[in-house]
Length: 211
Image 1 (cartoon, helix red, strand yellow):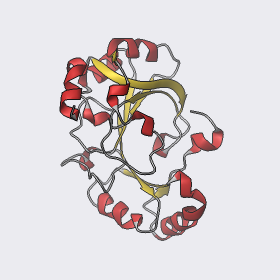
Image 2: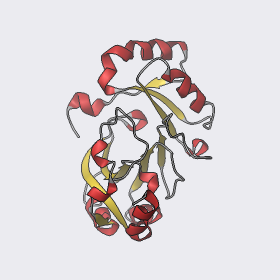
Image 3: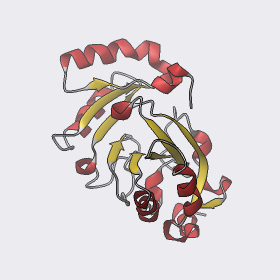
Image 4: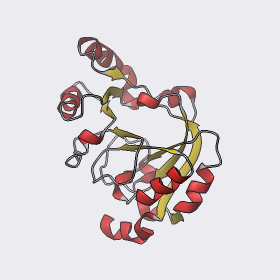
């Protein structure tokens, strides 16, 4: 079954292949430290070798869940903010999810590689582009935040290539790939000191040992 056939099972976004949902603090990028309800959607064909959520790649593993139920649970937590992540959430139509969250006064945030056309209404769009499947046309200018994962010095060129495509107000972050943190963090620090338009993003949730 291809991804298109899989997506069609989900009733135009009224059901989604839910991997997990949890209330925690945002651990990366501009929103670091902010309380939010995370919704992880299954399905991804981008295939990052260092992905820390590979369990989410196959959407067929996760039975469809009603979006209304997900929204109801999210609304029960103090922080009125939801982060939609994956997998690759842009595989699915997200207009209904966003509309229902907005009805509850909940802010909507998304983390995406930008590999597919973005749907839904978002208060914050974090774009984390991947070389093997670059972002779809037009999504760079929609991004509020550009977060590029750095696993080797060669990735700085990829970061600059994407930074040249975003709007002037987009926040720019370089994030060390977790498994090589000790080897790459010095390079990132040195690079940002030479190119101060960038900031460093650390996976703070891993240091705090929270989800």
